Amino acid sequence: MAAPITIALDAMGGDFGASVVVPGAAIALERRPDIRFILHGDENVIAPLLAKHPALKAASEIRHTDVFVKMDDKPSQALRAGRYKSSMWQAIEAVKTGEAHVAVSAGNTGALMAMSMFCLKTMAPIDRPAIAGIWPTLRGESIVLDIGATIGADAGQLVNLALMGAALARAVFDIERPSVGLLNVGVEEIKGNEAVKEAGRLLRENESRQFTYHGFVEGDDLGKGTVDVVVTEGFAGNIALKAAEGTARQVASYLRAAISRSFMARIGYLFARGAFAALKEKLDPRRSNGGIFLGLNGIVIKSHGGTDAYGFAAAVELAYDMSRFGLIDRIRDTLPQTPALDTVAV
Image 1 (tube, rainbow, N blue to C red):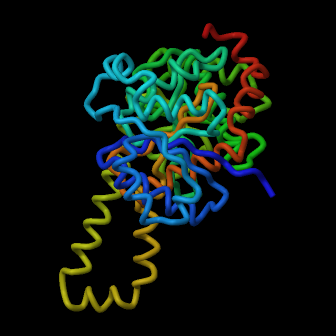
Image 2 (cartoon, helix red, strand yellow; image 1 turned 180 degrees about the horizontal axis):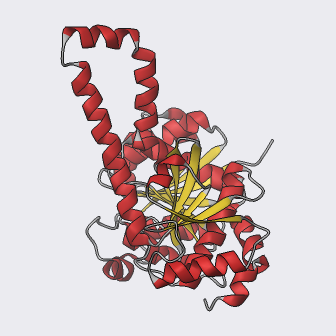
């Protein structure tokens, strides 16, 4: 039997703090009974919530701190004020010291990235970590990165995103040579800004044993699942993510309105209830909750700040899977072996 996976939780992070973190951890434990938790935060808040979940309480330890990062704190301010004391910092530090295999927080994204970089440092030759998301598609799932860690990227940084994304795809999807595409405004080689065009040239000319370079992909390819890994910089990636989540909610709203429009529509719904339930599950953004910080010497998962317990559980399960897959070792094995890195200034 495999050893348990220990997950450090920032119990005070997000819009709802421990009131979502604790029941979310309880849901994840039901599905992954070999998880152990270290909950960092205010014991006076956490303990009463934990008492409602006996199995979770038995698998958890509380590390008390009454300092936490607010959602509107600037990253530099949070780093100065919360370093060594906040629930967010302590969850990350538990990964650094080896007490936990992975940290999960629904807190302030900028602060989480700043603290993660400061505490865990980046892998050589990565100079800018990325947030990767697992994206539902018509073919199954793809990986999209960066979805909001940093704004803008040069050609070398885009190549590094391709390397890390491919390593993640091999771990998650068990594909020996995943396909990688660069998000662009067209598939023609003459289109796009200079960084994207140069990254495309480098990936074409320096074939990697780790992945297959597909070429440029467009926005509609995200949903089609044209490639296993879609690479873009954080500004475009975050907009794409939020647009997809908003579209899913919009479609769900249209369906609810259509079903309740008339008596016959409601009758039709009764006959197609199973199909609608399956569609609702597919459109639920909580199922894909959790962004993976890539490029660090440790695994950190960012949950959506406004999610509920079900969504937070998905982020915890993602953290579990990344640790079980040995993500850090897979990325380390990938980076030195890629010819493109010798060509690109990083």
